[in-house]
Image (cartoon, rainbow, N blue to C red; front, side):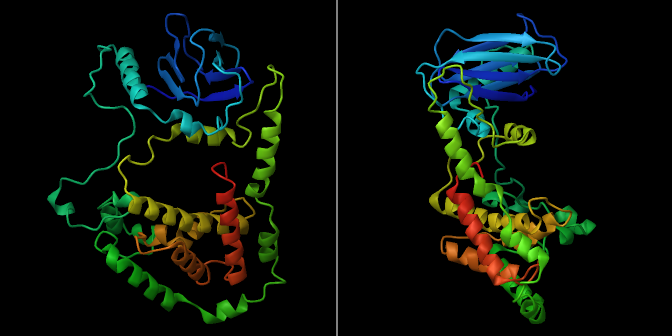
Length: 369
């Protein structure tokens, strides 16, 4: 299978530049292929393959490519001319550029076949090389088993882990492969009632002298600065200098860029209904609260306990909770605050409400948070 190379994007008003790392391989006019199909850019140099779908069109002619073997073990730089000179937004959201369209997927299959020495002709009914989702198991023993996880697509995952005693260390739901969704919420609420410590809760009512609490409440999180950064980038885009390069990935670290490029797309099936989408969004809120709590508690530097904190605070993760059509945002807020007063280090309602204020700020600031 081909490898997606590491790459970096930059742009001026009139051009887009793609720097592609191809370390320690032979690059020549015979091995490299670069061509533009409207707004889609295709780069191939075995074993590397990159397909990017941009928000607007490029000129049919005018692309240039050069190879520098002395730069980071090998760097191919591609410069493309925009059809209409303007600033393109959201080029830092690499995942959106790598999301395959139908025609791009067919072309990807053609390139893979060519690199494998096979016939490069691909029929329309041949399989797509994009990400596929788990389907209902054909195993008759799984038909009536409880499903859980992303869109309830998974079944039987914990069977081996239960035998090894690992499931209890990962989640709080006992016997996850035997407990139906209709039973999980009642079991969770009962377990929370038994675990709640009123003395500890009363002790955390006044935390004015608690250093960790005060530090968490006063922390300047990265999402508080994103609005300023976005405004700065917009001001830069007003430049009339065609040679002025805009740094369109200033929000992301190098590892974050690699992680984005490694995601299999599409993330969501195309046929999810309104109820499934609502369930996913409510689950996302639940997980965002848990992340925000830990982020503030650790001052943005996760510890070895961070995974436990996030998993425990989120009933989506710890109890495989599946929100349904009757659940609302208020239910998610209530459940998360309830768990924050039972399990973690700071069990204070003011801090829990502050965490929800921060979740609101994350959502208001958009996808770059």
